[in-house]
Length: 172
Image 1: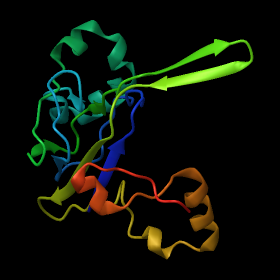
Image 2 (image 1 turned 90 degrees about the vertical axis):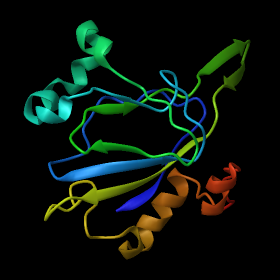
Image 3 (image 1 turned 120 degrees about the vertical axis):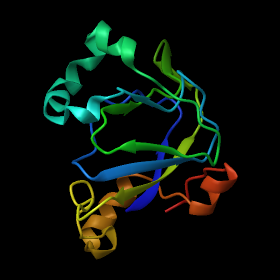
Image 4 (image 1 turned 45 degrees about the horizontal axis):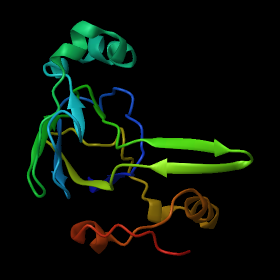
């Protein structure tokens, strides 16, 4: 399985999570430079060795100072590789911030950050398949009602723009 995930300017950090079960690995290829400790993905090293315990603890991690002290957020240059076990607890970090200022009845929203796109590949080391997050049914198999929902929820992006850094939503 492969694809591209983009974190938009102003996005908040994700909740801690593991992507799935044993025998699978994620390979991230950042399409922009990722800085250490401030940008990109935050990992809990060693959490893949205790998947049952760590999956239950994942949602409470941000409140646990001892666990948070163990977290790492590695830098990775554009086009580099970041490989990790599918069971590793991780989260995407925030991408700038969004602030709203009210002046009377008018609202002004200011967003900082940048488009942060990552290409990924999920690799199986044996008979395991990435069907937990990626069932065999494709988005291309969906009927007309599904495509209408997709168009209203998320603008499409031209794939070649990810590689040039020009992430521009297409008009529908």
